[in-house]
Amino acid sequence: MTTTDPAGAAPESADNEYHEGGCVCGAVRYRTTGQPVNVIVCHCTWCQRRTGSGFAVIPKFTRAQFELLSGDLKRYRSISDGSGRWLDLEFCPNCGTNIGFLQELRPDAHAIDAGTFDDPSWLAPDRQWFRYIFVRSSQAWSALPEGVEHHHGHFLEKEGPGEP
Image 1 (cartoon, rainbow, N blue to C red):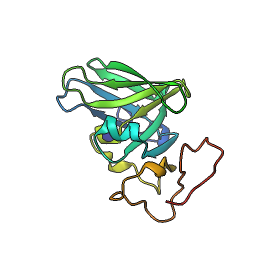
Image 2 (tube, rainbow, N blue to C red; image 1 turned 90 degrees about the vertical axis):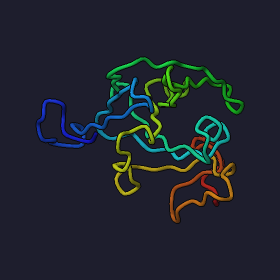
Image 3 (cartoon, helix red, strand yellow; image 1 turned 180 degrees about the vertical axis):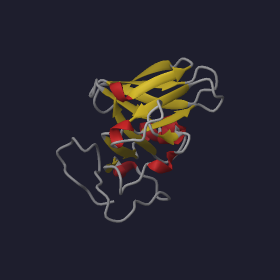
Image 4 (cartoon, one colour; image 1 turned 30 degrees about the horizontal axis):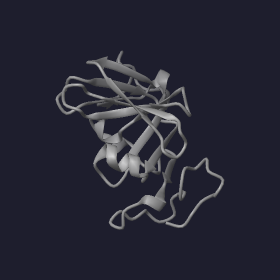
């Protein structure tokens, strides 16, 4: 669901905008408010494994922008092979749908898996800041769009932008 604030008022800005989503079985429902800080398209092997796909699309919000409406989220802590920092996967304990994750590196951030929004089409590179990362691990069948910001590893690594 993409709409105005829950009270029904018309949005004065993107801060009043909210989007809802949830898991496959419907037990977990959530709402995000406002726009994400950025949208990460991650091609790391960890995201490939946790999503069962070639990459993950991850809008990042502040924790204050995320509200769990119903259900409970189970967490699994994974330690990064590269940084040694933890990431807490959040998923539905009933159907196993990945909802997103929390991370040691950014304690105020709440990462959401884009496919769990009821209508993820509101996310678009012309509306949000997209960054493509760990493209060194991208699959040959997963081409990057031309002209996008991309990095061989994480954008915080000092290697700078890379070629796809």
